[in-house]
Image (tube, rainbow, N blue to C red; front, side, top):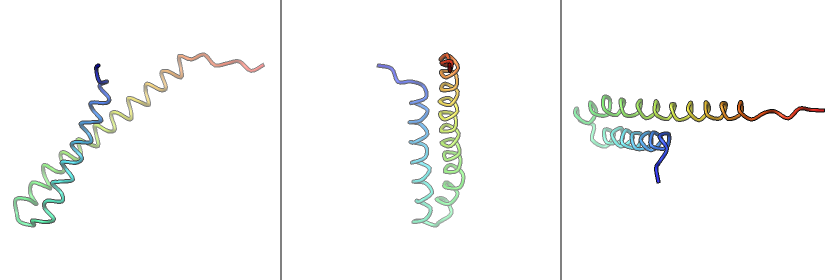
Length: 78
């Protein structure tokens, strides 16, 4: 059984968001220099990548639904 590409992107987005959230909370509990720098650099990159992957999945789903709606002929009123 193969997993669609959009599902893999969505899984990647969820994992990246959770890791980013963990890095952001780590700097709250250990407010020294390195945790703050890691949270503000790596955490931000992972959070942005997560948002971009989620946006890709939403856009791909929207495009597929529009394409499917275009292929279905409309019933004529009358």
